Image (tube, rainbow, N blue to C red; front, side):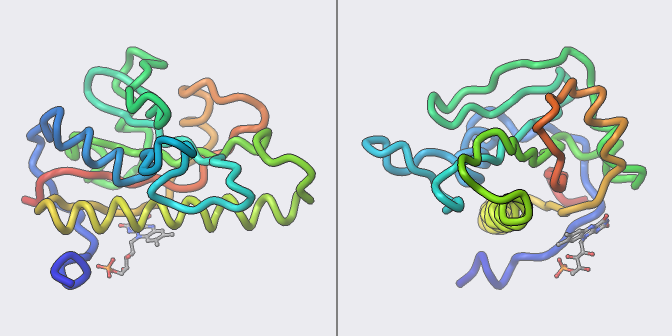
Length: 172
Ligand SMILES: Cc1cc2nc3c(=O)[nH]c(=O)nc-3n(C[C@H](O)[C@H](O)[C@H](O)COP(=O)(O)O)c2cc1C
């Protein structure tokens, strides 16, 4: 109840990093494996497609969260946070999360259905992130973004599509 009461949008951040344990907990809350025997996650996904990947832009580079092993895999060495939004928070917040759908993971699914599922599934992840942040005293903002330049910088594949992004950090 306290986390729900505290859930809100924060747009002003301190630049301080989160620390490894907090980043680890944040990502596990987002879409980590909570039933290792079945490989299922903290969020539901249509047809259990698990099609949303959380990319993590930090000052050190860009990483993809691999839920199965609970690890970060580096995919770029540049700091891409500034490409996630034109708003001020993108230059300050230490963590920029980018929710990316991989439509190749939907089998036997009409394109219109896949589009709806991906947006819905990403929304569940965004809310888990928001509630973790509320519980941990962190701030976060779900936000729109210029998708094309970021997708190019992230070197996304043809069937990958950025759904939304979310900055995370300590509130100012
Ligand atoms: C899909 C979506 C897109 C959003 N895009 C932006 C954005 O680009 N920039 C921004 O500052 N806030 C953005 N927001 C945050 C909303 O403005 C915010 O949730 C709303 O004003 C309600 O405030 P609250 O989250 O504090 O309840 C977005 C929220 C959602 C759910």
